[in-house]
Length: 187
Image (cartoon, rainbow, N blue to C red; front, top):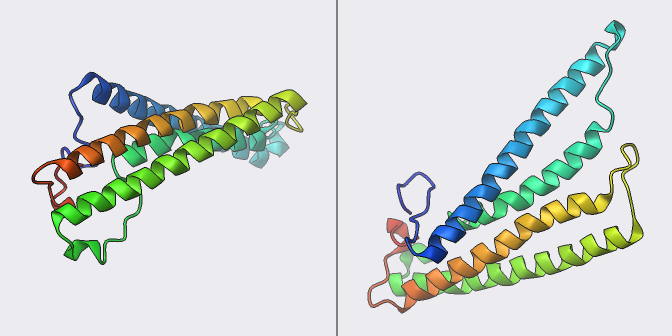
């Protein structure tokens, strides 16, 4: 698992560096958006608390939080998958050999690619629908397709990362001596 602190062992190929870069960039963007949303909510709550002093909440704060959190969730998915940050229940696989565990990862990574592609496809269709119907938010009148399109960027990155992780897992499974996942080597 790289340095043992959640950073994956980066493949030094052009493709590996590209995938690592887009996953990291997406996660950083998600973090920046969440940080901005926290600040927005702090100022909005302070404004509500100080209504007596002539302040008020930030107009449309809930709509902005909805849009931003939706983006952030999709932005974090590529990094979570690349670092294998998803929850893993390993009650039975701890007793399996390295070869079996390597092929289990191939199957689960294949399923993750299918899920990522399905989510991206359906999210893309939702984005098109929101654009075509011209729906907007209630208070800010912000077009809903903007939020959908922002999430679609993270979803697309998730598909790219999922395909890369699957290819990496297949490569490890086909190697003569796959590392045991409990050692953290190779993934």
